Image (cartoon, rainbow, N blue to C red; front, side):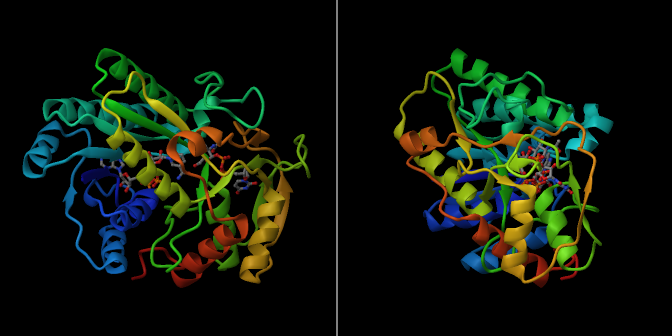
Length: 343
Ligand code: NAD
Ligand code: UD1
């Protein structure tokens, strides 16, 4: 099976290429490199000992997508390509809807033209907005209380995929709702390489540990949680990568699908900011200076997944614990203090 991996040069995509290879699947990467460099792909090739075809291109470029589908025989698509910075999406809503929603529409149109109707889509727990309760189940309502255009673009794409599936049951669609991916490949050769000052917790902590940032700001300590700080479901990126392999295997077994399969991709465990900091300190042997500051706008108190559907339907569950996530994040950061840039 040959899989088109849009956004394959990025953080989750690059890790998924390795797991696809391990499962005996061929990949073709399509990425406009707006938030990645080819260096990540070269390192993946080094890890797997094999070249991966790469086409630099944009998901909104229909002509180039047609050329891609003409040149390669593609059986299915894993669609990672998109913009993902929450704060930036508030400043640049049109750019976010254009890239994420229009990019997905163009891709789906070309897939239909070439009768390639299997797709796995990278969604986010953010579509649940402020969840009714935890753990969060897939059938909970979505689309309400989403605080930013990034999250809304994911919700819109999910709705588009549901409508598409309703119109034609030969489309086989899996929507994975990622919780909080962290960690890195254990080689330390690939990992998360955010632009500028990181917005997310783990890259921020890692950059404090390596001396690039002075101290972590903890956004609020008065939430109704174990220690007052926000609780999230962190998942090792390699586990998450494997969920895509399982989703592809699932799709291959289905003749038709009446609706998209929607699956939470998390561990089912919630950890507070302070618990993550402690785990990171243990894994790295570094002290993380921190200061409690005001809550961040748009943040929720607690978010973790009910993972029973993933286990029951995909036969997938996360293996790696928080210690391993922190150890691998640190291994990547200390070996690559400036991400891919320094190489
Ligand atoms: P990333 O930015 O590292 O990877 C996305 C890749 O897509 C980048 O390599 C970028 O260059 C490429 N890209 C962006 N727009 C493109 C376009 N129009 N055409 C072609 N390529 C394009 O992000 P990631 O963390 O690997 O996330 C992958 C996907 O998972 C994204 O859709 C993201 O929204 C989603 N997601 C990520 C997280 C997370 O915490 N990392 C959580 C939930 C969902
Ligand atoms: C954020 C996004 C969400 C996205 C997810 C994964 C927002 C409002 N939400 O979620 O849409 O799907 O990333 O990419 O940005 N924290 C600190 N200090 C920091 C950074 C974070 O205390 O410097 C805290 C946060 O308040 C939160 C936890 O750490 O409680 C995790 O934050 P983060 O890594 O940004 O992820 P989410 O808030 O879950």
